[in-house]
Length: 120
Image 1 (spheres, one colour):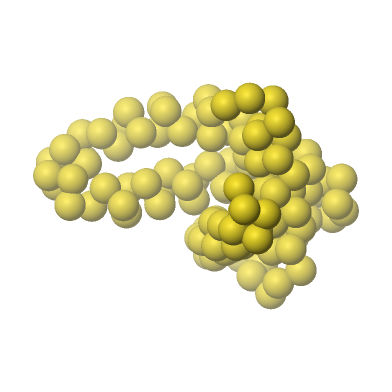
Image 2 (tube, helix red, strand yellow):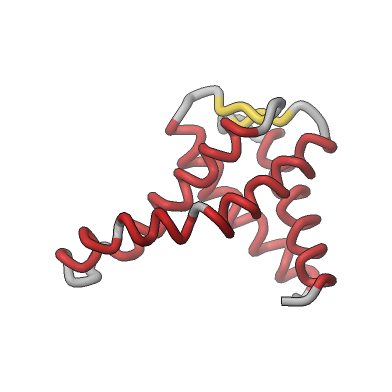
């Protein structure tokens, strides 16, 4: 991945997070600047924490013969989203885990739509 695609991913994620904060999902971001910081932290959490979580959930994933792999992937995504909200001051989850579930699901949808509109 080159620098330009990393920059585009950061911008799209920040914009998506800011849009999500305007929806009644319980995800609150204080300002557009906090959305950019949150997107950066979310990216770093995905790079450094996600592999550890995948390793931890490898055993249950193996025991279910990969039947629940999508569920485990979604759980990891929700954990990363929650951890990012915990780490960034100004990024709040009003309804706790429910906001994290709705926020991470909505983030994937909005980001995908933006990428499709950009043709990336």
